Length: 191
Image (cartoon, rainbow, N blue to C red; front, top):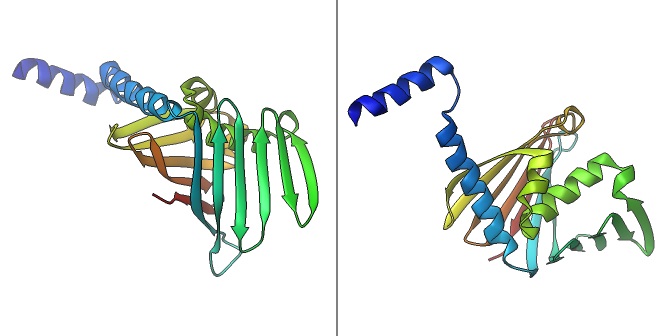
């Protein structure tokens, strides 16, 4: 057995890549985490969000309620500091602010489409959609896990450097999006 472990380590060092069986374990964990998240068909949770922007000296903070219903409905209702409602329903995004509503088709806005996938696919249990947009890796176990996603397309990599989801069991605790310019958005879900 020692010889087998030594051989695996040697092949790993020489090849400079992760052995296929390790990647399969990692991929399997990511798929199990996303599947576990998708087992909950409807969620309504309070959130606190912080945005660290390079152009500002202090982070922006907001709070509100997130609502998700399978297959493709997500509502982010910001209550503080200013009311705003963002609804992603199918391929349409609606943003309501100060009594005005604007609708955008996801097919017409790649950045918004990527955001919709980032937010909805894990909750819907759709690992295929995540893997279409991101390289997805995972660590931990189903009790306490982390999903790390890096964009696949060159266009997406110009906007987003990394997305990290953390959680426990079938609940998301944090969503961190790091943009290519270094700006960060952290969404914390209240327990």
